[in-house]
Length: 407
Image (cartoon, rainbow, N blue to C red; front, side):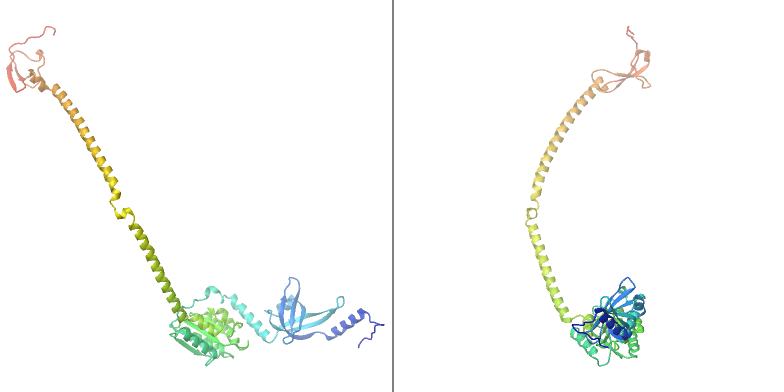
């Protein structure tokens, strides 16, 4: 019921605020659908969310408890949810607030929540570990392609591969790419291509689509089949913004099927140009190296020691000749000195030798036993003695013996 008022008889502010509160609370709790555009998580019990209408530019701030958020499952910003909210008017400030008593993912939000929960489970098992990613070959012998028959994705991949590397060989496996049977067919195709040793890389390609259309590429069975593959797998599902779980387990994620073709094979024209440039740079480097080495060789050849290698020996030859002459002179002097010393020694030896004494007229007497007779007492009258002279011996008989008086 409208309140009556006039400038002369205005209503008290409290009356209007209390009436507004009554009108708001009369609405009671109601389920609303909206998109979560902001989640402000706090350490306390009360959490704050911003909910926006999915069509109009209408958004409100709602408060809720941590228990309600946990019960809603893995929701993120951007998730469409159904919220059971109760509007309340705070009389002190006159502000309108909404309290959320229950929160559930709705529509795509429900699907995203289920995918997010599955993603966290598989991540906890280590299926997305970057250390498990296999490197793609530089130039694969044969490329396996899994895609829909006569699809735009198939044309994009084949045409771009043929344009970049005309000699590439592609094995195509056609499967459903949406619907309940799509995941099973893709799994069979993956196993078939992975069982061929000549296939070096597998591309799973599909064009863009709604979240429901891309659900097969988030199926747990397909993710595990790709994880078990020995052949590197490239995921090219949808557009840049589409991120099925297959992108996380694949060895390489391509933003589009066209991007997958660019990632799998090199560009022949670019490689040829690069090879030509590398060859040109190599030749220049070799020419520069040869020129530098030639200059170094010329510098070495122009050095005096190489132009006349014996020049450095001239001084040594002169010093050697001088040393030889000094040595010869020293040897001659030493020989002369030694010869003189020897001559003197010979003279002294000869002067002291018995032969010299004999030559001066002396004789050496010895008895029949060869003993020297140097005293009269060592012989007797009538005995035979031998006299050794300078030029021979004499046989003598002692006729008489005369002793000196001083003996």
